Image (cartoon, rainbow, N blue to C red; front, side):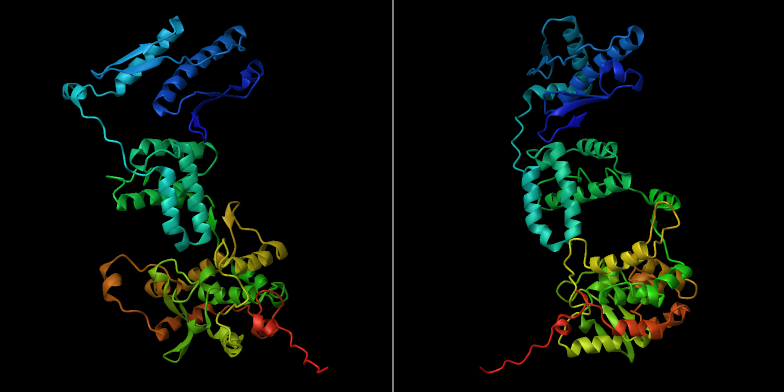
Length: 481
């Protein structure tokens, strides 16, 4: 069955390939004329049985062009808890009605206690909980401003799909896990991967968590956990070649060859990729750096990844960290570049670059780096479903560091959560700048031509990556008339 955005259910049947010519169509889609899912199932059951008979008849006698219809028999719920039906009197309608009664009887309460209580049960009070549409509007007003634009777009798309499937007038306290399961199954039948469907389910679950906190939904969240992409499934996907790939040394040597490196046309793409190569920082962390985040700690020049300035955000608490600046970055002029920007009165490391893009703060850096890797150098991932981009620098750094740098120090450097044990969570102190700087020898990339790269970096390219103050042309002095 399919549910139209109007709330009406449709019957859908794929015609067997050998009968598509006889039926004159590949897919049969018929409106069931009802919005109630239980009645729709009954009608779909009947219609499915009729078409099954037609298919068998067509294969046996070559007849397929028979028109079938849904019998709209009427169902009455009696005061004693039973059911009665009215049909059109035909044998076909009577048979369908009897089958519907059998199905209804199977789901109604049959215990003596339930039967005894049913006639005297008090009327069910009208729910005061908001409808799905009302709940979404309130959720949007409360949460949208605090989310990254691309995250909100994903959440909004998932919630709207859910509202269209169940109907905007459905009240949040009436939603069942079974209805959510039907929606999720329909998403997968439309070709979405289980990973994507699990993400959509997770997004919608947040709407219901908000309703649970204010008491509109009692008990368990009816959406949470309906579809879960397990660790085993993630591992299996990784083994099939899905996911990020690290760059090998030969690829990195091509990317940072001065002739190729110069093809990146903005300052933020150039410096951003170098900082990523020598720190393993996420692209969004690099993009939103402020000049005040560069500081000298215990005699070591460092950059602090934080969310203390407007426009900054971090993935989690572990992402807030101190990162010593690699000597190679200093040799290529990063600290001098920071001091130059300070002298110009700038506030951010990349003052001419937007960090409020819907695709994330690091979108401009990612696009510049991706252009070099995919368009100029025409690099391809090793696996058919693998991915290579700026995030591959992070993976390359982590794999390089794992040879000699202990795991706890490595996690502190790249902003990963510490171990789950009491020792790591409660007893260890933060690492000092001097202790973290022990990673320097591990990231001594032998292919880097630092003098040539420094010369390229010193000649800032035109474009948004250039400081606005530096891009202004000097005005000619006014001549008195």
